[in-house]
Length: 380
Image (tube, rainbow, N blue to C red; front, side, top):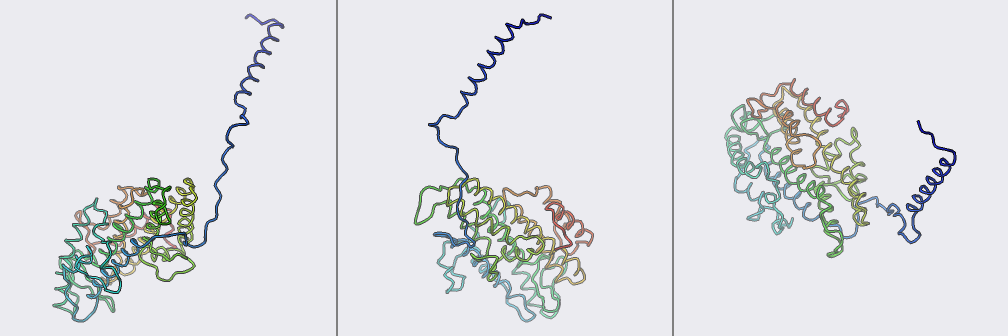
């Protein structure tokens, strides 16, 4: 081995030192460079009282569903209930022919549920068909009001004490089909689509007093159905907001999602894109978890009422509706395969038939949903 002489080693050391100094001087920050940006700081309000908030369209959609459901509920009596009109059901769904209460102002609204339905799974056509089926069921119920008219393969009314529900031939409650269908394919779909694409909305140009991005976030918030001072104020909760509150004790969902709604809107107004996206992710994931938790409560409710068809089928109709709703979030954490597995627990021959769902399948569905979302089913 050739060893360097002491003189060569000294020269080599000097060279390395010189290179090191040069490298250090190259990466040293020039005094004229822009300073490193500090984190954005701003105040986040405690209520959703931002400048120029606009939730009109989403809240009108919620009100339209409310009147549609009220019409279907006219059949939920143990007297000579009216026979539903398929045309009137379609009028509510499409906001045509002035079906809503005049004082509501909804008839003059440009909002209609059909136009805002996420139709990737053909739900608009399914709704149309269900309206005709509902007429058949209500006709059967009106013809035989003193007994339980519905049974496997025969649409009509299921009766238990003070509960009277209109169901299809497979025991699925029409009111829940429409309510959960619109909650999933309109409210959840529209809101999560706005949130998942929020970065694409202009946040520079101000129209009126807000940007397009602020308005998009506001509309998504409106679809959640809570007051601006939720959860301090629990008055007037609608649809998803009501269900969120129902599982709050077990999940802490109220404060979690409202804090994120507030942080996200404040972040948008202060051009904090990272803060906006972080808040958006919390909103979307918590919203999905609310659906999972509510599914578990209804599946458990069905288990304790297997011998009471009206209550059993009502609970199962709610539960299955929440599974379907998952499909309408493009950023869902639950997989399509898991959705198919969950729906399979309610199927016979590939078709959902609530008359034929065994208790063991409910146990499997509850365990599956709890595992997917890290929920403790015993607390729900």
